[in-house]
Length: 502
Image (cartoon, rainbow, N blue to C red; front, side):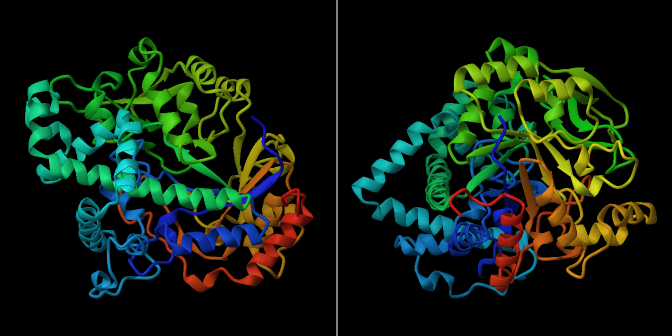
């Protein structure tokens, strides 16, 4: 569905300032929303909000539907009386520019466990009823997730397909026994999901009341080591004996990698999903709509055809394209859930068939300015080639920052960019590309906060195909200045993207 002309900022919550070493859903999240409102922005785009595993990637979560416990604000738990200031007395000095995941995890876990124990003994009848209601309403994914995480903890964090065979294959008697033995652990994982969704719901309400809509991100694939795959093995292409991915997801060689990207996720058993009338996908979209306003579908092209690589391959080179029933899926979703507010990440190897699927459902596609200046006037990322029903970015979480990109761009790209712009303004190349995005005819423009702040490669969020060292960037509290807000406000108004009432 086309969207009104507007703009927004891309920022993952882990990037907020916080004394706990990682951004969370506390005060700084609310301050950021105030900044958006004052700057006349109407969208806040986040990366996937799920509980991250190895490498801390939000695109490889233990659940496609759960929230990340690391984003829970200890300050809000203190406001509820579940923690005290004394609980924060021995916090170490954290890096304020990068998330130190390994250092943070045990500290945050201890705080969450203490809050959970206090909730058990102190919760009012109303709070207990709210918790019970949450568990019932989310049971379709929460029961499997809580048991999965409890089992994972009891197995030293190992992957589910290495567990005892009876548990890995979910034999009923083994599951019943695990549920009895892990009652406390299951309660803990349900409680922290309850708290995550409570905090997120309050933040989203605050944003919506200020005219800010949240764009969430739904990766096409889920992590192999996830409650989704463990609980629903029949809808994934798995080796029946070992539980390993029989066919792995990825993309062929492209802009980001000469050997392609081998993600390792199992691809879907689309035949089985169709037999089930796409029940799992319907539940996933419904879960997303519980806490975002707009859904960005990552790797949209995989719904038309997907790159599948056989088990044992070490790169994505030796794969093949297989057809997916995208039209049938989105028709089913439309019939069951109505017309959804969806953006399609249609980057990479895009065919006319992918474009036809996107356009059939009127999903806006993505345009990235960093891809615009390396070829000829037919380049679809050049602003004069845009359709209106599109979302333009200076760059995405997978790109370098605009300043980092420009510093490493070829002389050919720099020449083309300078010819297109006329000159580089004294404000810097990042503001030139922000202005170019906002002035384009694309209905929506989304700018990473790193570009608004004029930061270089040190602030890059992700290097595709690099397993570690990503997703860590954080900004400083004093970075969101009144001057920046006014600058965004002026340009947003100038290019017709301000809220109607402004």
